[in-house]
Image (cartoon, rainbow, N blue to C red):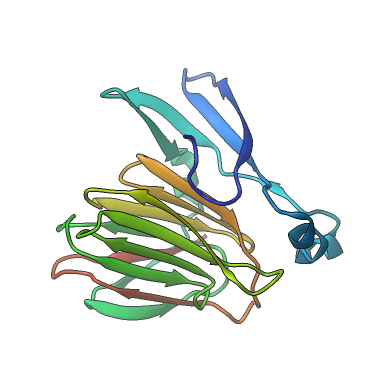
Amino acid sequence: MFDYGIDFYSPQSFVDSRGRRIMTGWMSRMDAGQEESCPTRAHGYIHCLSLPRVLTWEDGALRQRPVPELLSLRRFLRTGTALSGSLNAESGHFELVLKRSDPFSPLDLTLRSGTVGIHYDPQSSRFVVTRKNWADGGTQFREIRLGSLTDLDIFSDASAAEIFVNDGQAVFSMRYFTAPENDHIEYAGLVPGEQLEYYAI
């Protein structure tokens, strides 16, 4: 499984000049109702490509990591260190990074004022990602079984989110649409010594 999210389709890859296997996917799995009400129609398009990912095969498993060149997009750093708290994003364009010191503790994280949600329950080994459907207002979800959560690397654009879990062990990609003023990030479940890193991009 390349992607456990809601919008990922028809991936293609190539080998670059450094010998890396790079893959992108088409972020398009909308139904007819979602396409009809897709806000980007006003700008002449509906779907988009995912971020480029470096594919590797390590210890008998596929790993997908965002290309390291994306680090150059980071403009400034803000951190959340309280056990629970919130951050305001200047826009929908940001990266969130979390390295866990306790990979067996629960975590809750919401992006864009609750439009996208992430929940990890170590007791049930459930890692769940949710999205508010812009067409009918309902909530859609995808989940995997996850024995521990070591890290997250989350990229958000104005209408897309890609969530890299456990150093590329799993990825969730999805489109979302919400008002520009919905820029609130909330989190709960950090343990002492952990920090949520926010980078504007």
